[in-house]
Length: 277
Length: 168
Image (tube, rainbow over the protein chains, first blue to last red):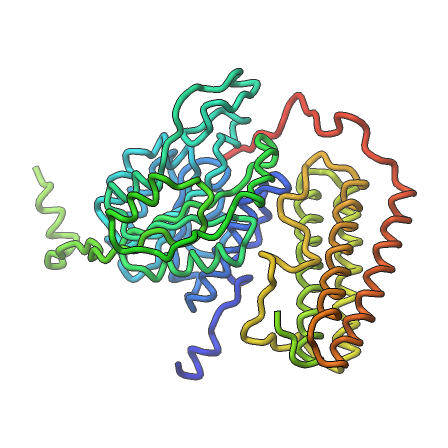
C-alpha cells in the first residue's frame, strides 16, 4: 500500500453520518450500525465507494445513519434496487439492510430470487421476530406461541426459517450474528462482504420495547460448534436442525457471482431513436 | 487473557475505561433523543467519570495519546468488562436503573482486575491490578451510596399505553 492510500484510510466514525438514530434506547440495531462501520473500516473502503440500500422498518433507517451513499426504498423492495445498482455499478460495495418483516414477508419473493441470482451483494437482516416500527405485530419469524395485545394467544403459525430458504435458493454465503457481540458481528460482516456473490447475514437484534424477553438472547447465543462448510447437503442438515442461536459462518459456497453481459455503449441520441414514433 | 507487561496491562485498562465511556455516552444520546433528560444526564455524568479514569491512566503512564493495543487484544467477553450491554436501557427507565447498570459494571471491573491479580502475571502487573481492583471496589461503594439518594422506581414504571411508533 502506498503512503497516500494509507493516509486516506477511514476509521469507523468516518462511516457514520451526523444524523442521530431515533431507535428505542437499547435496540440491537445500534450495535449493528456500529458493526457495519467497523467492518467497512476493516475492509479499507471509503464512504463514497459504498452504497447502503434498505426497505422500510426500524432496521431500514440505517442508510441515513451512515455517511455512505444510501437509498431508503419501498417496503420489501431493497433487494431489487440493490441488484440493479450493483449490476450497473459493479465497482461499488453494496450492502442491503432489512428486517424480518420487510425482508421475509413483504420482500420474501425478492429474497428468494436475490439468492438465486447470486449478485455480489451483502444482505443484512436485523431479525427481532416482531414488527417494531408499527407497535409489535407478529412477523414471519415470530414464534407461534408468542402472545401479545395484538395477537392474543399467538398466531399458531410455524415460523419462517430464513437460513434454510437462503441455502435452498442459492445464497453463496450464510451466516448468523448477534448484536450483543458487536465486534463479532463486525468480523462476520467483513467476511460476508469479502465473499463473492450473494452473502446473507442474519443478525439477531433484540427489540427491547416490544420483545423485552429477547434480552435473554445473550444467554442463548453461542458460537457454531462446527466450522463453515462448502457442502450444501451438509449445510442443509445443519440448518434444518439449527437451534436458531448458532453464531458464525454456516455456509460458504463457491458459485461464481452473476455478472451481466455488457452490450456496447450507446449515446443518448441513439437510445432516443428507438423510442421515436 | 495473557498480560505479559505493565504497559500491556495498562493499555487494556485504558481500553476498558474508554469502552465504558463510549457506551455511557451512547446511552446519554439515546435517552436524550427520547426526551428522558434525567437519565440522559445521569449517563452523561457516568460517561465523564469513565473518561476521567481513562485520562488518568494516560497521565500515569506518560502516554501522550491512546496506546497501541496488543495484536491479540480482545476480551474474554463480547465487550469490555466495564461496558454496559447495549440492551440494558429502556426509554422509560429511571435514574435508579442507570445506577443499577453502573453498579454491575463497576463490580465486573473489580472482578476483572482481581482475576488478573490472581493469575500468573509479573509482580508489577499484579501490583497494578490489585491497585485498580481497590479503586473499582471504592467505585462500587460510591455507586451504592449514590443509589441511597435516588428513589427506586415505582411498580409498573415501564407500562406505556401508547408505546413508541417511529415515523419513516
